[in-house]
Length: 249
Ligand code: NDP
Ligand code: 8X3
Image (tube, rainbow, N blue to C red):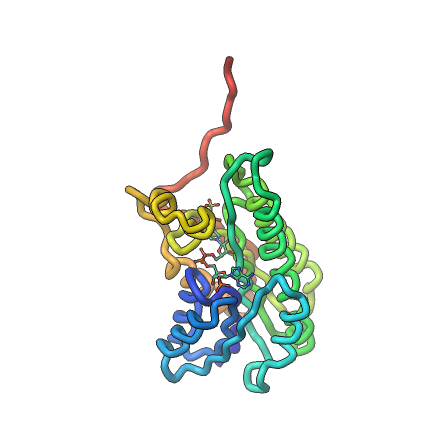
């Protein structure tokens, strides 16, 4: 039985990961800001060993305190799924609300770094562990309005690679999973509750599901310990790269 710590477990990929690991009999630490959602998920998971943490990953002291307060049976974390994150807005860079940029930087970059820092030492000490970071295709491929969101995911990609080099010889693994378009609460958050705009993102196509990504996370974590998937880019079949843009008079 592994102990799996999942951030952003109240919705989308995180909740789907919780269901997938619980089905395999793993022990779960589920963290997010919406405790009511986490409680509903825990009830749904029945007898699975689950510890809930109401946590805003942007708060470094709170991250440290949650990790320090883990009950003994949940304290030796084997897998950290750094999933909490968001995109806010799709405006061109000169029109964005600076608060939106700060929310993305604080959550996707700083929050992910805080959680990693809080749990990595224990993994190295035990010479066993796996950090699975949720990046995005937006970290490799630019698109209009992706400005800071894509840049935060480029951080996640490069941070994972640098973790691999720091972790060389420790037995601890690091993986960056980079999904393309997936239908979760992601677009409702990006468009600040505009459900119609959010639904439009997925209209007439087959997006990835949260379960598709949970399956990828579960697969990477379940490979033999001598196998490290460094980076895994996943798109819906109906999505591919766009052409470069040429401006003409
Ligand atoms: P959802 O909006 O469905 O879920 C996001 C989760 O992150 C929620 O559980 C939310 O919980 C949590 N979260 C957000 N901010 C914080 C915070 N400050 N502290 C703790 N938890 C937080 O989106 P997805 O499941 O789609 O997104 C998960 C990850 O996948 C994100 O990092 C996203 O960037 C990435 N991604 C998504 C893609 C997509 O198309 N859906 C594609 C590629 C990557 P709560 O609000 O309760 O705190
Ligand atoms: C989410 C995928 O393409 O909407 O990270 O940015 S995308």
